Structure formats: structure tokens, C-alpha cells
Amino acid sequence: LGLDLSAKMLEEAARRNSHKVIQYQLCSLEDYEYPENCWDVVISNLALHYIKNLDRIFRNIHKTLKTDGVFVFNIEHPVFTAAPGQEWIRDGAGKPLYWPVDNYFYPGERKSNFLGCEVLKEHHTLTQIVMGLLNNGFALEALEEAQPPGEMMDIPGMADEMRRPMMLLVRARACADSLL
Image (cartoon, rainbow, N blue to C red; front, top):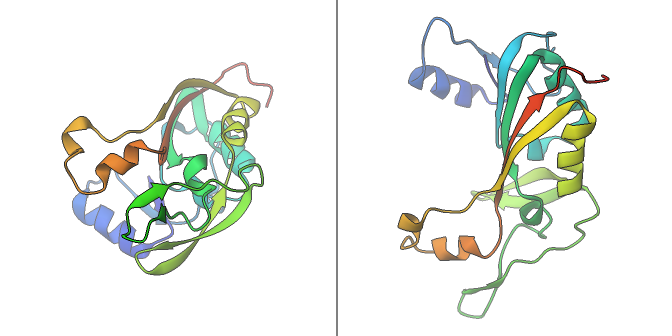
């Protein structure tokens, strides 16, 4: 089952991955009904930084996973989402000087510009993300701050991606002995 809020994204997914066992549903993570003990794996790709109440989503994902089910997700790194406008501070020639981090410990809505459009995201601290998983019945199995591979360093601007984390990758397992 693939969920998305964008009909265009679902159409593209169905075009690229059409199979009788794959279903696509126009639905938000907040509105999905989360059937109990249904899935072996839940994967979330770049969606959780749009969610205000992560604890509720983590609780629902834990509920919908089978015992020992796996939750894998990537989310924009809290250092990235804490930056005002999610833009580098640049010198007069446009060269990135530094990545600003401000109001890190104040979670909540952040505005950024993506492809010329204003986008609203939710900033969560690393503590909120990790403790949200642990407090909702998950065991953390892996956590990685993604880095670009060495062979991509000759792409313009890619070396600057080593100056701050942009993505956080997480693998967690639903604990059978959860108190939830």
C-alpha cells in the first residue's frame, strides 16, 4: 500500500510500479486508519517533517505493525529544519559561508522555499524524534546522518553538503513487550 497526499505522485508511482498486489491510496498519514497488526514493514520517505504530532504517528505505526515489524524512515535532519528559511548564509559572490541554526529547541512550523514555492514544514529536535520512537514501543536499530558518496563530490555544490547534515535515516523495530 502506498499513501500520498498528491494524486500526481500516486499516478506516477502507479505508472512506474504497477502490479496487482500494489495499491495506492490518496490519504495523509494523519488520516490513514492504521489497521492493527497488519504490516511487516512501514516505510516513510521524506514525509515526517510535515507532521506536527510525531508521537501520534509513531503510536499509530507501532499499532499497525506486526510483532517485530520494522519501521524505516528518512526525515529532514533537525539541523536542516531549524535553519531560518533553510538557506545558506552566503557571501557577496554567492558562496556559502555557513548553515545557520536558530531556535533549535523550539519545535514547530517552519517556512521554506522549494522550487519557487513556499512550503510549510514542522521542525522536531533529535530528542523528539528518537524519544518519540522509544516512548511509543520501538527499539532503535540504526540511525544515520546521510552523507553524499565520494563519487558525487565533483558535482557543483555537493562538497558543501558535507558541512551540515541534511537527512536523518532511521530503522526501528516494534517491540513485542511494549506497554502500549
